[in-house]
Image (cartoon, rainbow, N blue to C red; front, side):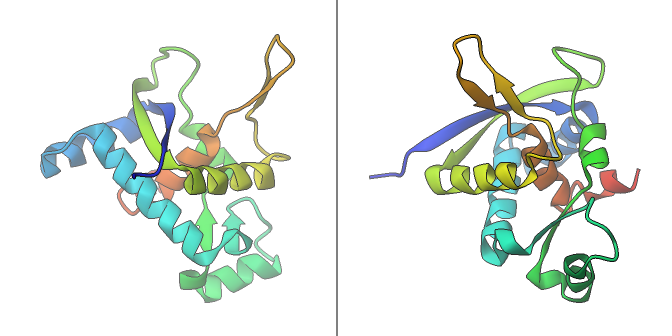
Length: 160
């Protein structure tokens, strides 16, 4: 029996979508398939090094973890800064910088990893919303964009 997959829908920034679209055309694939493949690769890398070895791009350059990550990049997962991720967040609705939506499929274990990353960054990044019925909703947009931007295909965007 296959493990249950959870759907995460995300609207992508125009620049991310365009790069994925070009690569998908080259690979004769669909954008959603490529985005899923990239997310799976990045989650596997993050799981391999562990959340304790995940460094946010906003951490002080002089911090011990940041210095250690620069010495041993294979043992650490360095996420892009919040400013960089914010830059590639689409505006609400169908703004000029929003291109399309993809549905990402993750397992329960992968969802727990994304959730743990969210909890770790919750003091620094938006994504916790209250509903009218008193429930809380988490948005993993910043974590997913951070994971996508870590991939070599999209890393060039971090330099812009």
